[in-house]
Amino acid sequence: MVEVKSIGVLGVGNMGGALVRGLLRAKIADADQVFVYDAHAGAMDALVSETGCRPTEGAAELFTQCDAIILAVKPQIFHHIAPGLKEMGTNGERVVLSVMAGVPSPALRAYFPSDWKVVRVMPNLPLSVGEGATAIETDGHSEATLLLAERIFNAGGSTVRVTASQMDAVTGLSGSGPMYVFEFVEGLVAAGVKSGLSRQVALELVLQTIRGSLQLLAGGEHPSAWTARVCSPAGTTVHGLHVLESAGFKGIIIAAVEAAVHRSQELSKK
Image (cartoon, rainbow, N blue to C red; front, top):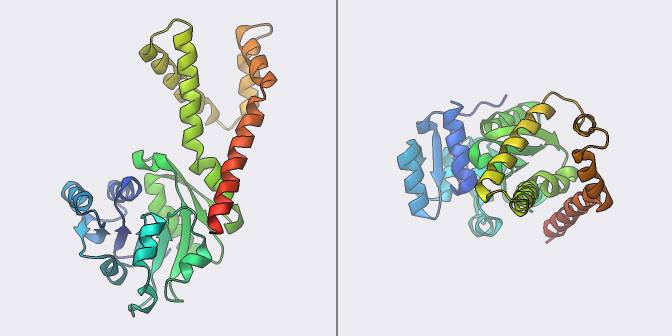
């Protein structure tokens, strides 16, 4: 594994702030080893006060001070900062981990010295509560670099490895995935309310049902096996399943993910 003595985080919004907290909570780094910068001074000062991490006076200081740098800003902000990074003349290589959506690796590498390792990473929103699903792009990277990326992002959930050609699929599936879950939950809650439950009771029942169902799936059996178990012959559940199948429920989900993947592909070309 690539060893780092200091980690810099550029941008401390939901994602960047969650990563800092995760790194410290998992004891991957001490507070005095984590440097941060955000143009929004209030957000940076609040995180520094909360965690004890070290603020910097500008983005350039992160790149000169830190062995590993996480890019957690919006792409338009990075493009404003990026000019001049390649000529910074830092001593030694760096590992740059980018969570910026829609910015492919070749475009990222063009901004940095040739000996720097630039890794594209795609987490999703649950990383902000330590339960993120993160994909790490493997193309051209050593095992040591990938292990470093995994160690950092496992602090905020779990990681998988994918190729560059699969990153748009990741964006459409897990990147947009929380929205599908939120909408599914809202639909179930609305159904409970329509059937006579209070909204609070319906929400509590739905959330616990989802938690329990996920625990069942954690055992490794295919979801269809659990569907078969819960559908008693001529019972209530199989009647509900019939409505879902008749409406093309799975097809709608597939189409939604494909639309998000297609849009990610479009954005990557801009």
